[in-house]
Image (tube, rainbow, N blue to C red; front, side, top):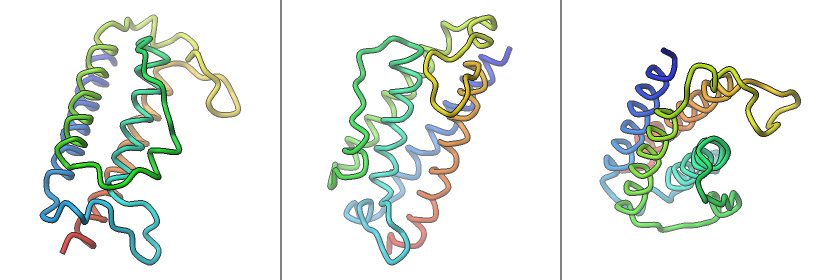
Length: 148
């Protein structure tokens, strides 16, 4: 079942996100930017949390999450422990929501038009994991370049 694969992949990659955030030796470096690096790891982490809670939690799982996207990029100096808690809570939410989806649910139209055209829920869930992994790679490079 694709649902089980998605649950496994989201769990794996959110655990990698948690590991990356934990790996920062100097907590202040989570919020550093430099030259052409315009987003800090902390802000990318907040963006991923907001993105997943909005598109999976709110629109598939009917949670009461309200996204404030502009804060994902403007908040600073959130403690590392709080970021990790938010990542863990997001992983639990995603696993709960995905565990309730049937194969038929995945083939239904996603309830929000995000891009130019309508899409199925499974298509968008695959897109969201690709988005997670894109920013996860950025965070990895950010840490290795700026956490000195």
